[in-house]
Length: 366
Image 1 (cartoon, rainbow, N blue to C red):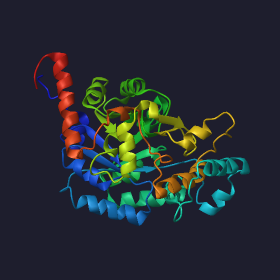
Image 2 (cartoon, rainbow, N blue to C red):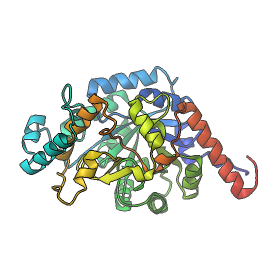
Image 3 (cartoon, rainbow, N blue to C red):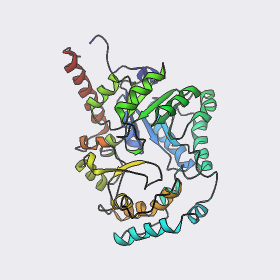
Image 4 (cartoon, rainbow, N blue to C red):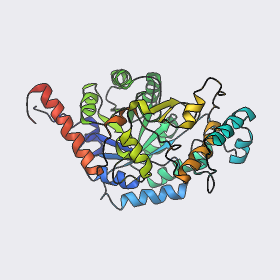
């Protein structure tokens, strides 16, 4: 091939070697991917402002000036500044009773110390804004909005020479964000882990590419191999957003129980439900998702109340390290996560497989 197919607009924009974005909650994974030629976005929606600031400095100390991103959630529909106790008090008796029945049925232990999920930026707008202010103060190279439109922060970010990318699950969301002036769109398909919409990756990516003009589009959803990367670039994407791919890496700090489950899982072992946060979300199957899917279950609550309701189950399961109860956000590409490898090796394996895929199509060696 005359041109390196992996040298994309996003690579040029960020000054990186490979169009691979690792979305991760683990600093060690982020640093490893960045230092291997890729790009990383650290999810910080679960952390308080002081921790976010410390994490940013920790990464900067280890990447020698290379760019990185931070992901937050910016929920316009959440309460402005209501306390956790006040929000919990609004959970209806029917849904609380059902949650208690699940806990009793499966002997789910109570959390050992508080609810870690109560730090989530999606719980109220003040919490999210306080998190965002840290990113603006620190002038992080790229802000990604995992939920909600980032349009309201564009001026402040651009004044500081920061880039803003929005993650979307519908083409009309992409259109609104493009009109607002975002610097990139992450077009995420139904295959994805975590919060995701109802369109498949192969449907949403080319639709968004067709309206994006010069704005780079990043493909997300079920992407765990080099063949996925090659396919995404053929659809017009400028890079790929990968999450599940890194969960079982050696650097990943998630529980070894979850790593082992991920390696054993296929796409059939994930559930797509609103029962975790009140928004559609893909996770590893667990008793919580199975019980809420039954006909007799009450309707899940809207966000952020369902997240408050599910947090005791999730935290208690994690504290007790109960493999039969635990869950984790996981996409439908999880079946290709079959071993625990260093993140650096994962980057190079994906790149090599993508180049092999292009070579097989053209018959020309790289």
